[in-house]
Length: 304
Picture 1 (cartoon, helix red, strand yellow):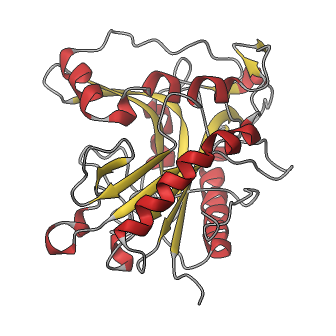
Picture 2: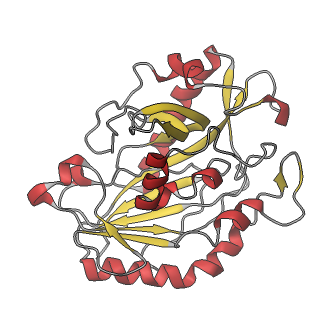
């Protein structure tokens, strides 16, 4: 019997001038600010979509938003955001093809808005010209504490320079045992899958010297898989359930987020991918994570 699932896709893009598609035309935190993207962010589609995660600060809202490093005051109030690029995410769909079509449709809508401001989208696995990101001003005590609590914040300076897609599969018929077993299996295979991510040979404006700067700085610094369950135990792959508001209370979701690396078809440079496999009690409780592009080579979920 065919496995029932939902899939959503997120994809991270660099920003570039529509009049200069060379490395000199790239727009990054040192030459573009969030305020410069106001017309792109105003009245964006998907605002308030209950199937996706929306933070209380309004950064992650709608089907696209600014991706970057958020900076906070000593009291924990959002102060500013260093622009890395833009991220597009699709609502959950019932097939891979439908998710890819959604992504391409949203990408087109976003590009139309960007073109009006003199900007466009670009794709790369690692920023080819930017120097290492440095927190300026240095992190406040509240920010340091946040990095200790949230694993995804600990490598914010590294993630600032890397780009890629996130794939999220919701499997409502899977048990928690099946999800954890899949996560453990993918973690075991991850070093072999990582061989397909050798795709970022440029860094700081020069040939890096290795096959992939992105794989070098990210491949060994995060667990390959995260399993989101209701009551995480002392296990390196387990995390609390995802932060979608409508899964709270009696609608607790058990989910597994699998991080892996894969490659793209020739049309787009290869990139690293995040696979998310989730168990939920309803379609509305699909995880906050969603993403890919039409050229992504997807590993078989049934083979995991």
